[in-house]
Image (cartoon, rainbow, N blue to C red; front, side, top):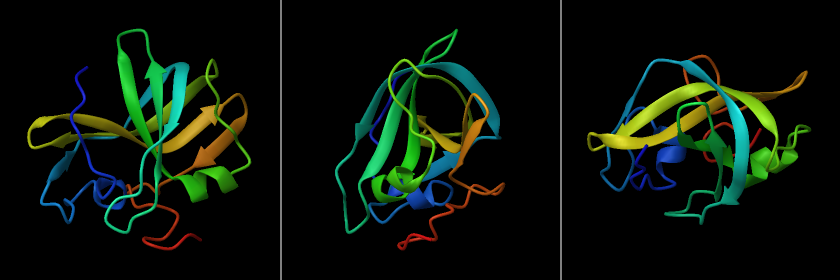
Amino acid sequence: MIFSSLPAAGLAQAQTGDRAGVTAQRSSTETLRGLVLSVSHGAAEEGLPAPVYLTLKTAQEKVRVLLGPRRYVDQQPLKITPLDRIEVTGFKVEVKGEPGYFVASEIKKGDQIMKLRDQEGRPLWGGAGIR
């Protein structure tokens, strides 16, 4: 899978577009299973919080997964680290017709669950603030 740049602004607005004029098309919900290769933190952009990403190796490919703002992710009881085997439910976004990221709605590790977005893909951290 080839990843193009999706600004952090796409973090909360992956369905409709962002302030930089990049439109993102959401796919239907799907679930990926695999091994976490890395966890990284992006830079905050345009007044939005710094995002957390992970790279997931599935049976077919390596996928870049967008979790959410670092501050929200860090507050969750479930911690994701490299070499964890996880299940991620979410949706793919395309940016300007090119593959973008897999946006996580929920992550399962064993019997633990991290909820990031509701069934409609809306962030649980409540827009610019954090619940």
